[in-house]
Structures are given as C-alpha cells and as structure tokens.
Image: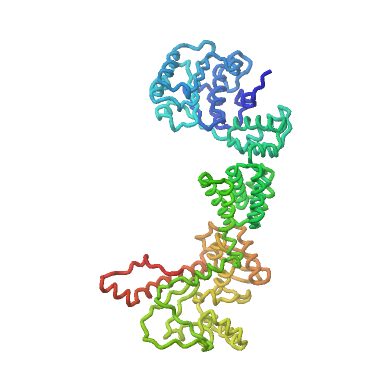
Length: 616
C-alpha cells in the first residue's frame, strides 16, 4: 500500500477534529445549523492554518445528503466523495496557475447550470489574490449576485492584494496561527495513534520550528520519524533542526547571570560543532528573556510548557528587570543585524559580549571594574572658565607662583554632584562646617587633615552636630563631603546622603530617589513615594531597599513604602534643584565674562539660555 504523508492522512474531516480557530468554527456552526448562509466566504491566514481544510468541510456540510448542518454524516455519497476529492459539484481552482481573465470567464460560464449531484455547486478558489485585475473584474458581478445554487469559498494568504470590491462582497474569516501548546497536543495524538515512541521535549522543538503552521509541524514530524528511525527523540530533532535544546539556551542565560565570559564563549563553541542555525538560537534566547521578564512581573503566568518553569523562576529572581530588558533589546538588534554580518556565529558572539559589556550592573555594583582612563578623562573635562581656580595649600608647602598682573577670570562651574562654592568675600559667613574644613581648606581635603589630627576631627564632628539642628532641610552639601549616616541620626534632612551612597540604579534607583523618609522608629523605615511615580513601584523593590539599607547601616532594618505627596524634598527633587542652580550659575558666570560682554555690546547679541552647555 502506498504510504500517505501525515499532513494528508491527518487532515481534519469535520469541525470536531479541527485544532484551534474556535472563532471561525463557532460562527460557521451557528450559521449552518440555522441555515443563515452567505453566498461567498473568504478565509485568510498564513500557510498551514486550515484555510482549505475548513472550506472543504464547509462544502461537505452544505452538500451532506442528511441535510445542512455543522456535523456531516460522513456516510453518504457526497461526504465520501468530498473526502476522496472526487465530488463533481466541488470545483477547486488554483488561482496561482489560472490567473488569466480567459480562465476566469471559462470558469464562470458554468455557474448558471444546476449542480449534478449535490445541493450546491461550490467553487473553492485557493490563493485568490494571484488573480489578475481583469479576472477580478470578471468575477465581481457573479460574486455579488450568484445563482442560489452556487457558493464561493475563497482562500488567500495575502488579503491586502485583494480589491476592496471583492472584500466587501465576502464574509471574511481571519485564521490565527496555532500556539505551540496546541501543536504539541495534536502531535502527541498523532504519534500515539501511529504507535511511535517520542519525547515531549522533541515535540516542542518541532512546534517552535513550525511557527504556527500545523501542516509544517506534521511535515517536520514526518521528517523527524525518518531521521530517528521510527522514533522521535530530542537529540535527533535538535540535530535535524540545527537548534540547541532548551538546557543549552538556559545555560547561556546562566552564564550571562554570572557574567562568565569564558564559559559563555565555551558554550557557543560547543554549540557551533553541530552547525546550528544561530538566528534560531537567538530567537530561543529572546523567548527565554521574554519568559524571564514575564516571571518577574507575573510568576503565575509562566507555564511549564518546555519543562523549565523552575529554572525560569530562579533566573527571574537572579536578574534585575533592567538587565533583562537590556539583554532583550540587544538580542533583538543582533537578530536584525545578523544578515549583514559576514559570519552569523561572530554576530551571535558579539551580541552576547555586548550584553556583558553594557550591563548597568557591571560598573555600578563593581566600581573597581571602571577603567582608570575614564576617570582621567572625567578630570580633564573643560569648564567655562579660562583657567582653573587655584586650590589653597593647607600646609603651605606649594611653591609660590610668580607675581603677575591679575586679569578678570570667570569662576569655573562646579563638577557634577558638587554644590556652588561661595565667593571669597562671602565664604566665611555663608559656608557651613561641612563645606569648609580647618585652615580654610577646600572640600575634599578635610578628611586628610582630620586623619592627621584627632583633636581637629572631634572639633569638626562637634561643629557638624551643632549646625545640624540649625540647618534647613534643603541645606546644600556636596556628595563627596557626605559621610556615612548612622541609623540613630537618620532624618529627612540627611536622607538624600544615604540614597546617594546606595549601590542602586535603574528603575529601582529612580523609585527610591523619589521617596521621602517619613519616620525611622525601632529599626523600621517608613518611606513616602511621590504619587506621581507610583506606577514605577513594585512590591519586590521594598525587599531590595531593605536589603541595601541593612547592609548600609550594618544591621537589619525593615522598610515600608507608602504612596502620598512627600512633605520634604526627595533626593530626586534635590538633584533637579541643584541642576537648576548650576545652570543658573553657569549662565551668570558666562554672561559676566568680559569677552562675552564685549561681544554682546559690539554686535547687539543676546544669550540664548537653552543653547548654553555646562559640565554635568
């Protein structure tokens, strides 16, 4: 007996055997049972989702000798002949091979004649979008008002190419791609009926490669059975498709979690020995990142379809949300750029290395990894002044520069994170003890002098304690001067110091920066999150804040986050205020420069505020 391929052998013969497309089956079932029939139906969708199959079943329902219903009898001559493809009143036309207007006119010449055996004469036109414009015009009138004994069933994979005049005359059904879970369930039924041993993991690989097409899945299953010598096993399917198994993909994700570049490249080298499809491997990596991101927000939404739910949940707890989103975007860009790369493996490895290189956690949680050259370049940033202001030497050991004629010099704009430095004439009266150390030293040298003299350190601490009660909450202090704050002295006025020193960035860092400290009682911190930022907050962040603050203070503290309007200035609001003050000072310094004033007077110029750039 001649072997029949699975895609033909297991083609559904009635609506009950059809997998998926419930929205189409429900509509057609009700219409058939109540005999509310349209004269033209259009089925659209990608390949292998059941367009032609549904059209043939519909033709069988219309011509069953037991009457019109959604459940044909499968016993009458009409049902048997339609199943065998030899029913005279079912005219199937391949529009891709009959595109000429003469073919369409020849087809329509027989429309007026009554059916030979059935109740309706059914015209099934497949890939109807391939017809020419003249063919559509010839079909238009007949399609709108056909004889009562004629039904048109049209199928296409590209409905955009159909004229709107054709679309408006048809009852349109858009068939969806099948989910991998539905494909796997159907393949299991097929293999159990065929008596073939299989691994469920192998079927998930086939379902993923089928990309929503049941016909493609059955074709791949046929190929896998032949390749596996009568069995469907995961190693054979992986070798056949050229895609690694899920364990290998999760191994790559674990290497990214551990930031182990050596293990990452070693895994890629092992996978490359089997000549894989690196584009497909990258798609699997994207799918894993998507499942991890889903697990971080909705753990219950992660299914165990690939037998890896436990690993996905563990990885979701190990990754930050920022890392997952960044890795997904890098993988997506790598997939788009892969065709332009001379070697797909090289493009794949570069994508993985980008994930390691540009992770926000690398430099933030491991400051020692920051290259020294970057720090040196930051120190070399130019300012708006013509020459830097000399730093006073507390020990008087620096050589005295030769006297020269003083020239007007504009003061430099402070570096990021520093506060405006008062003018020399007002410095003694305006600065606080935290801003100026003994002997008139600049901020940054106080710690050195304090380390050399214990008495001087005690005096500085006493001064800080005396001024703390008098200083307002918005007191300006540089981040470099801010020492570690003890839990017993923590308050709303110095909460920003703690936030600035915590190793936290990204979304969670933004949430904490928009929180104000409401109270600190019995090792419990109550934070008030600005209600305008409440959409960024997640419950898991509260545990993260508690962990970081416990590490900062040296013993365990608990944190509770409430949403309201902060009564004091949050660290984020403080940063914005300082940025505005620095911008205003930069504008004032620039406008006061003699050269700038001369240019403005000579050319009647003015300063455009938004165009002024200053070091952040």
